[in-house]
Image (cartoon, rainbow, N blue to C red; front, side):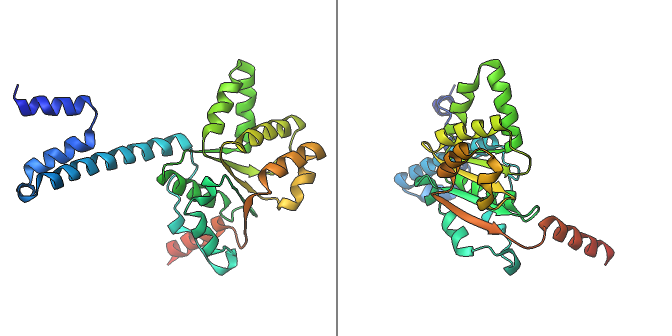
Length: 253
């Protein structure tokens, strides 16, 4: 075995995949031969850092379970009828709200793009290295029932609240059971100490207290979710209807 092959094997053993690929690229490209050693080494290190960051983002995206993994801030429709404050969205895209452990409440009628916007914000957070978990409220309560039944609730809860951003989708779409309200309180209470919550709802915030149907629990949940939250109220027609109308128009032309 040559000394170079031995070095490559060691690089592989260290799992420096980006470094290895960049090194092989340098060997195949004669243009690198004219560069100083320090510059070539810098290129190799940068390639390794980039590779690691890309792997981490890919892992975070997979673990996030985002409904719309391709949702991007850049693709948001700012049509006047939707009443979206572009400056607020661009400010949120900088992720300072995560560092400050603030929340985001996205409300609006069915189909106005609440979930897409939440996922776009989640994607931006992931791109900057933050862990995210998306879950619909109905699915969350189902998960709680299962982990309580098999005794793994505390482990499940710890994993959930360790995520820097928790996206709770579809708040208020189904009657809230008393037990579910208590479970939601426990989640948001623990989450308030570790990160941020993004919550989407068809109900305006002023109706949340009545919806929860328990003044004490409602006060506690709203105190943890609302007092430090950025609010976005989406308006306009259903985006699904608009897209279907455009698709039908294109197919008939």
